[in-house]
Amino acid sequence: YKPSSMVVSIAGKLPSFDLSDCLRKRFAPARGGAKKTFPRAVIDQKKPADILFFKNTEQTHLAIGFHGYSRFSGDKYKLDLLHIILGANMSSRLFQEVREKQGLAYEISSSVKHYDDTGALVISAGIDNKKLSRAVEVIVSELSKLKSKNAGKAELLRAKEFYKGQLLMYFEETMNHMIWLGEKFIRDDKEFQVKDVLARVDGLTVEDI
Image: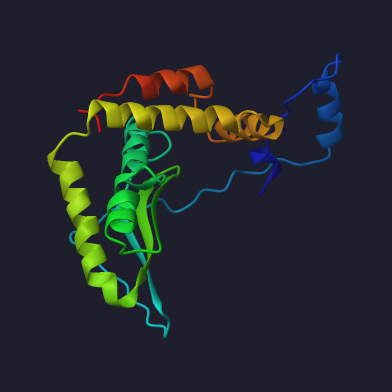
């Protein structure tokens, strides 16, 4: 954490006077310094891998992870919609098939992470120990279906509406406006206009997914 990496983000009913001079005076004593770098992710995995940790519990907690896209990738919105179709909510494929129809998991969902240099799609589940093998089979089956056959247009439309609804609800809080702008600026992410993000999502097709 260095002053050279600092951004002051302000949102809401701003005062009529210019805040720039006020902020410069307040932060003038802080000295810059060179920005720190970080070791970038190296993607060199050639085959599936597993990590197992045994604990004497009634449930198995499972995470299946895949390499994803960075926050700067043009494909990140495609992955976001795929994640919604797959496991983001109670209408998603994994929740319906694994939990509701077959009763194989107490909870199951997917999540997406976008970092500066890489990303991840993760499926996580809490499963009865005796049902683990069958649950994994069904999860892999659902992934295979998503890979071999396009999502339906109605399913994609629902995913888009969910994405847009979540984003617009996020912006009902003034603090979230502030966080959004600050993060976009400090990460040098050019796509900070909400209307541009919504347009990108609206433009995606079943072939993209």
